[in-house]
Length: 340
Image (tube, rainbow, N blue to C red; front, top):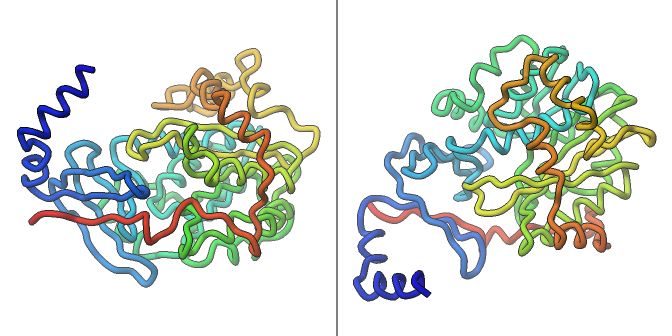
């Protein structure tokens, strides 16, 4: 093909070598045989917290990147896609969310999106790494956009599981799990298990909703975490709705699962958009002009392609503390800087 001929010509001319010889590059090894490279325009912050290395770099393609332990977490160019997709389906499905709990979310962008809903009276956010929170407040203010200063925000630096355990039963309207991926050797894998979700169910008020980021969800990688996580949630909750969105900087379709606590609740997948209900609810909350999320986008997010639907349907694995599953090994999923 023409593309293949051009690739051979470029290789013969040494163009690939020439590209990486210019400036500083950040290479993230996604898996054995697959990596993505970003040209770094400027290093904005580089430090070591109690829990992880933390870097913020400005890149030509995606603007600022937040990198922890060598792994890219989010980018300035498309973080709004991820965060609006994580927050608004769950928040909009609830008729009047007043008390919200966020596990993780150190950048502050999840908190930012939650507080756009005027019914919210309190949003408790628990993140284990206060140095990441402080660094993002200083170097990446576009993430939180002042959300930390909102009087409804209650920021706690500590263990998210312990923070949620300390909440009264049946007291939370929406739980949002914006956690790092379950990695072998990582700190969060126990928050992707049946025992943790059972505790979440106890903390949800009647009509409560939970949503969790669920890892890669493309046809080639959805089986790693997305489909077993979906099946794990089905062991605890009566209604579980998987959905996906394209986040370009993540190099994969990205997955989420949202659940209803109540048996007789209307479908978040299609019931929410029936007869224009979703757009009407967004408009009533002053959210009719969100930059990404609306009823058409919602329908696309919940319209899984056939291979992913079938893998969700046929999944039998269940994630427990005794038998966890990991998206990848931290020894193979790494990042490295090259250059000056």
